Length: 232
Image (cartoon, rainbow, N blue to C red):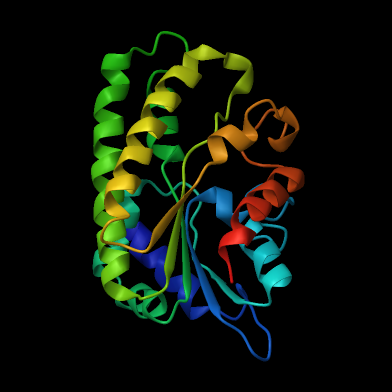
């Protein structure tokens, strides 16, 4: 799986003009993550990152160049491996003024798939996933911070199944609480900012594609609006 991720990242970088929006005078924003910043299912064709994905909305609003290196299905473990070992990815991060890191949804969704649904998932099953995610995020942030002097923005996780209520809200609340504590600690020695997607999406089912787990165009706009105040 990690080998496939490295190949996918290489393909994205080598075809980078397809996934980059630019202006004559610009700063450089790099988006890392999964299908959320990719803009998956905004259109029928998912072969390339979508123009209505939130990194591109930010690029248009703030006149910054955007390189979207997100990969649908990516987990935090796979992103950590790529950030550590993919030379082209590391070079791209070095040139960034802003790095957006949106990852972690697949860590939980893979558990849901393994359990064949949300029903019956116990906190004992969720705890190791949260532990590994927090460790992976700490390591990703450390690696990215070594590579760039730019601002690093990370995102907590919204509930992709709002109709499930507390079945997923409880573990997500716990995960996001641990995540916030990690970022608060890392604020002392890294230039990092946490974007609270969980609260923003709460009570807004229209932000998620019906019968899907991905943001609608309205949801992508909400993600951009949360981020724009942090882009100078």
